[in-house]
Image 1 (spheres, rainbow, N blue to C red):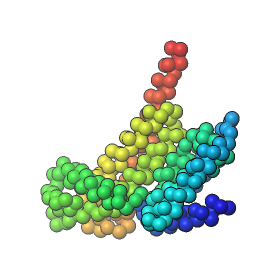
Image 2: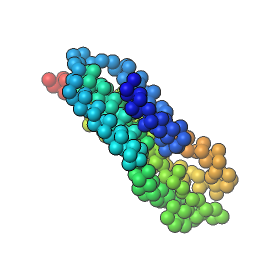
Image 3: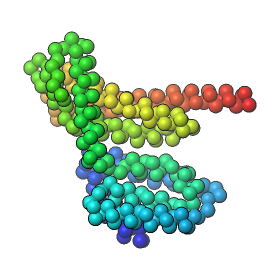
Image 4: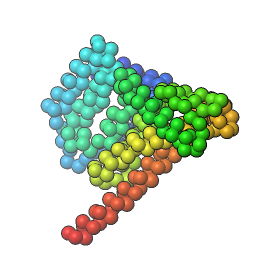
Length: 268
């Protein structure tokens, strides 16, 4: 009850961001998944309450929550809620239980909306990178291209790679899927980390290809292909392709991992 009273505001603000901010919408999926995986993994055998450590984490969470409220720092305020949940877990089940629930806590952490400062810092380089990839692929198809920053000029058309097309949304969502796929299909931390790292260039490359596809369709099919429903549909298809590629990489890493583990067992 005290948790609800203390952290009602951060929870409300976070749900509002999930519902209204396209860059944070993946939280609507990750939050229920976190609850599911916490329930599925259950209570680890031999877990014991650690009251002192749990109380210390809870105290810090409350301090961060009110300090962030005074400073109007939404990211820290939302993060304090996750810290409080970690404190409650340690209070009732100990630090061992917290480690056992690493996946639910990681997914919940990834669902916290990224601060605007980081969004603005990362989005612009991603826009330029995606523009370069798209323009390069258009040139590869012998289409005359002139590029000025994040504006791509093709015969009779001009493509503006906006912040929404930077690929940041697909990148954050794909990183979350990488964590999820790694937990489900991989056994070792190095291969899980490798999968997450591989997801980054996959997201960037797919977004660059999306810009190329948009330019190609705008030029040879219809200018309407670069806006509205058709443009949104292209993005959904491209993200589906990125997910399939990431899943395939997870399967390959899982196969290699299984062979290595079998080899080490046979040698032993």
